[in-house]
Length: 476
Figure 1 (cartoon, rainbow, N blue to C red):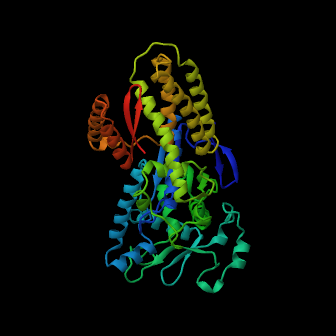
Figure 2 (figure 1 turned 30 degrees about the horizontal axis):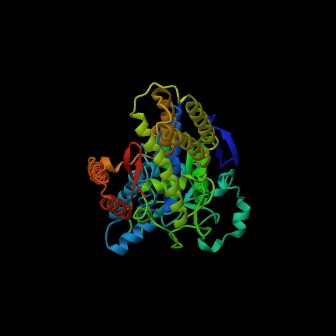
Figure 3 (figure 1 turned 180 degrees about the horizontal axis):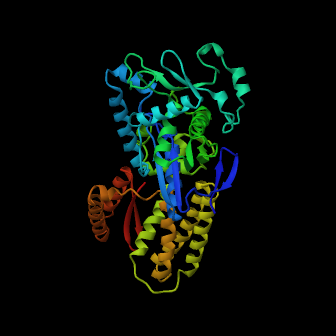
C-alpha cells in the first residue's frame, strides 16, 4: 500500500488510482528563459523516482510535463537579445534536456508547450466566460472571477476575505475583485499573439496548465505536482478554473504533491534574488549522479540546503555505494556452488522489504537509501571473505543479493552512467594496459616505476587498489 502526502488535505492518504493499475501524473515544468538551476531540478528528479517506483510496482505510468514557452520573461529576454521568443524557448528547452539527461531523469511521455495548445486554451476561456466564471474587459483582457468559485483557497488554506484585506485594489480597477487573475492578455507591441474572440492576445499563466493537463490526461487524473511555491497562486487558480470549466468540484487532480525548496544559507533559491546555481555549472564540478543523489538524500517535502560541502558529502557517500556495485558486478561473473550466501540473501530480502516500506511511506528516499547502505555493508563483507579465500563463492544465492541491490539502485536512479560505454570501452582498455605495465614493474621489483604509475594516476583522480585478485582502479 502506497501512502502519499496530499497538500489538499494536509495528510497522508492511501493512493487509490483513478484507473486500476495505472497512474496519471502532471508535473508543472520550467519556463525556458534561462538555464535551469538546482532548485528547478528538484521536482523533476523527485517525480522521476516516483514514476520509477510506480513502474516497479507494476503500474502503467502516464507522465506529462509542460514547457511554459510563452511568458513575460521569455519575451523580455528575446527582446533584449534581438531574437524571437521561440528562439529563446527552443534554446533553453534544449539546455533543459541536456542537464536532465545527465541527472538520469527519464523523458516524460508528453512535453506539451503553451504555443501548441492555444486552441484548447481559447476554448477553455470561452467556456468560463459563457458559464459566468470569467469576464472580458474593454481592451481584450479576460479575467477569472474568484468570487464565483466558492471553494477558492482550499488548497492553500487561504481565505478570500483575508486576501482581499491585504490586496491593493488600485492595482487594476478593471477587476471585480483584487484577486481576480488573467486568463487571456491582449496583444502588446513586440509580443507573440494569437486570434481569439476577444482580439489578438496570448494566454495568462495559470490557464495553460489546466488546458494541457486536461488535454493529455482527461478531466480526472491522479497526481499533480510541482514546487511548494506553486501552491498559491498557480495551483489554486488551476483548480478554480478547471473545476469551474468542467462543472465538477471532484474533477481534476486527486492528489496534490509539492516538494520543498532548495535553500542557500536557509534562504529560498531563486533567479529573482540572484542566489542560484545552474545545474550546468554544478555539472562542471560534479557528475550528474552525484547531484541526483544529493537531492534524493533528503525527503522531497523537506527543505534542502545547498552547499559545496553537502555535495562533497553526497559524492563520498555515492562512491561507497558505487564501490559495492563494482564488487557485486565482479562477483556475479564468478562461478561457485558453495552454500555460503544464504544468510546475506536473507538480509538482502529484509533490506529490500524495508526499502519498499520507506518508498511506500510518501516516497521517503532518504530512508530507502539508508537500506542501500545496510545492504552495501553486507556485500562488502562477503566480497572481502570471498576474494581473500576465506569463503567459497555461492553464485545462486548471491544472484538474489545482487538483484536486491540492483533493484534499489534502479529506483533511486544511480549506476546508470557508463564512461566506458561512451568511449566504446577505450578508457577500460587503456587502464588495463597501464595496470599491466605496473604489474610487470612490480614483478621485476622495479618499485620506483610501479609507485610512480600509482602516484601519477592518483594525481589525476584515479585510485589503484591492490587486491589478492590483482589491481583494480576507480575514480577518487
